[in-house]
Length: 171
Image (cartoon, rainbow, N blue to C red; front, side, top):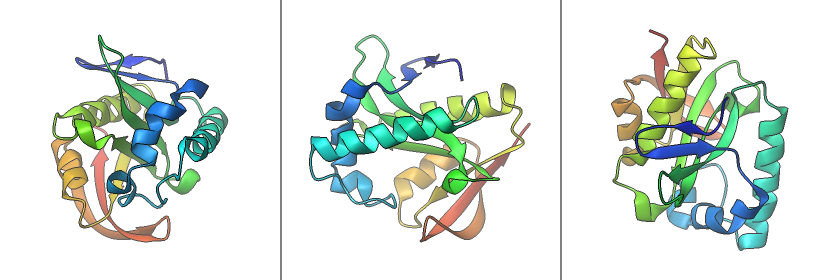
């Protein structure tokens, strides 16, 4: 993916090693991590280890796939991470993901970033379908998926969790 990918308000860019402190606001948050398969990081050092694994994962992915930093244009304020990658790291389905710091929830950033990634996936990567895998009680994330024109397909079990599968087909 040609990064940074820009939207009206956001930049999606590759992670850097020095993003660990900012990313800890996401990975260290019980409020965020309760919606993921991973527990919160105990400290910035653990977040730095996770970040290194994330960067290594992204480096191994085919072009266009991975997890990236999300920043606010103008201020370069770190908002969280977003991504487009094979489900469970192996596919064949492709998942859009978004994990933002709680202080920026409710501003439409997750929706704006997810739309940009989905559109990029269809337009530039020639994907035929993108899914979002969401815990049933995560109404915020479910709303983001709906605002991205994704529709509920039903339940699914991924990452060892019972999730709701949202999907969108290529136009």
